[in-house]
Every structure is written in structure tokens, then in C-alpha cells.
Image 1: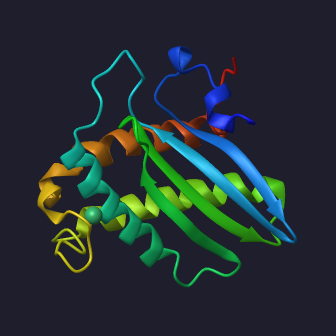
Image 2: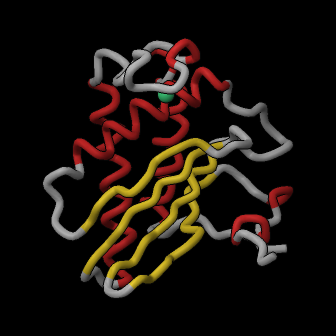
Length: 168
Ligand SMILES: [Zn+2]
């Protein structure tokens, strides 16, 4: 069986960062996967399930809401890594040049974080809309994760590029 791309990354050398881990092409649509790594594996405590789950609800809503009016770019997925060290963001693009991805995604992440901070309650916190809403916290529980992500986004913007993976 062919390994998943992410299994070829040396997780012992990983630092916090926002990594462009994959570009998939199907027809004229390109799908970018960002690994938003908020904890250095084996060096830092993992994110609690409460913070992870709550942030998933808030950021997934924020990033979809703000990208609603965008042309030819669509959020496909935002969700937590099973190892609780970060999140995946998957975005579909049509008709974009390679050099347009970075500024687009940097702006998207910044705007989504700003939007998230203005939310007053955790979206979809009920049995109808979530598989286990009892593990969800309050808005206060996501602010630290939001701060951690924002620091990485700012650093990424400063360096003008995504973080770079070290492969096994
Ligand atoms: Zn949920």
C-alpha cells in the first residue's frame, strides 16, 4: 500500500508551522491541503480534545462564511488532526496561478481568525448538528488556539512563504 504523503514527513523534526502539504489536480481544479501544525510533536503537549473540537466548529464556520462570496475558490474541509497537534485546511481552486495561492491563503487565514474572534457563541453546539456536542467548550476555550494560529500566520506572512517540511 502506498503511504499517505504525511507519513513521509519526519515528525520528530517538525516545528509549529503552516505547511502546504499537498496539491492535487483533477481536471482544471487544484486542491491544496494545508497542515496547520500548532504543536511540535513529542516536544509539546497536544491540544485538548475540548479545545480542538470547539475550534473546529468555530474556524470551519468562520472560514466558510468569509469565503462565501469568493469566485473560483471553495473551502472543501477544515478539521483536526487525529494526533491533536493541529488542523487540516483543504481548499479547491479553479484558474489560479501558482503564485496566487500563498497571498490568497494568508489573507483567508487572517480574515477567518478576525471573524472567529467576533463570534459570540460556538456554532452548531447541539445534538442535531454535532456528533458529540458535550465535548464542546465555550468561545473562551478557542482563544488560545486562535492566538497560536495567528502567530504562525503572521510569521508566514513575514517570511513570504509557507513553512517547509523535512521528509524522511
Ligand atoms: Zn462537533
